[in-house]
Image (cartoon, rainbow, N blue to C red; front, side, top):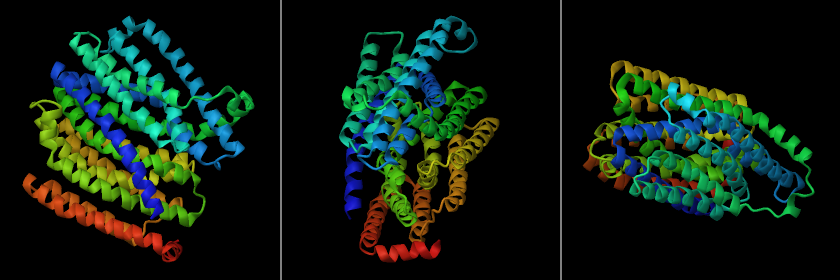
Length: 482
């Protein structure tokens, strides 16, 4: 039960932080939607995605790399201290490299804008957002690995909050740089807060040479290369999806697609981020195969108990959310979101295994998993474009994560992870429950949600309690299935 209490504590702290960040991010999107309409949302989404792609290419997965590298060493050991210093210094070098790459692009912005629909201030915004995400991400990783949850939560929440307030101020001032500031300010402020929280006295690192830290970081970068390639596939697929949608169905359809993506992937995405704060460091520390299996199955049960009610509630409120967060012009986005939500259930199943691959530094299999998702997603988006039906972009999302989860289950056995019978029952029941709720009328969804969410949570709590008291029985089950 102590494990459950710790996990709930982390979930509450990071959940409140993520909710605050998402609330202000939603307000920022709302401000842009009111000011510019669906076209502004489409432009904002495209520039944000471009910054994400740039961070992926230049950041080498520094946040994930930092957590796994630091957490894999015993707390208080010399190797752990070297790993922390290596992550900090490695991120600084990557940030300087980012600046060197973007400087000529910013200087030649006039020429770039002739070939691409992007202005100089938007290029600067991408550069600032990228550099901030790399340097800030490394410090957030240090805070995460050290278990400094409150500092981590404060930095991740206040960045979007202050960035949104700055965006609102520029709208009132009728500035021409509103979208650029909306993209760049949240990661830049988050970086500043993370650097402030992770202040390091000079004596703490003076006895670790740059040569030692560079050697350590170079070894970690082997996994970073695969993380980068996998993230390129994922981010590139998202960018191409918007490009294909814009090219075949217009910027209006892209705006509808982006609105659904923000509410679905971002609002439920904060749950994945919250889960990962506890899950990834624990996987990186775990060496015993039985404990690894217990961790994966426990996390899957816990995540499903939280995710299933969240999905059904979001389905019930999708239309009011679209009207309140955007405008009345985003009715199509509500239909897209309904089709996306089932996909998040399969995403959770695949995610549970994907993080095991990262913790075990199994880069090739992690890359394969992301490639399956990206290829399937683009195929679905292309079909949506050919048929001229933007609602099918939601079906493409779900189809991609069905393929993602299927491949994850195949790879799970390769790394010694096996789902228990209880996990299979839980996943199957959740899939049926969510499918019925998504097809039902709104009034029925609310009624089913009230009964079903309580049943799911009670079943999960009972299972966790039994796992905590009957470890011998759990170990026997895993051993028999191995």
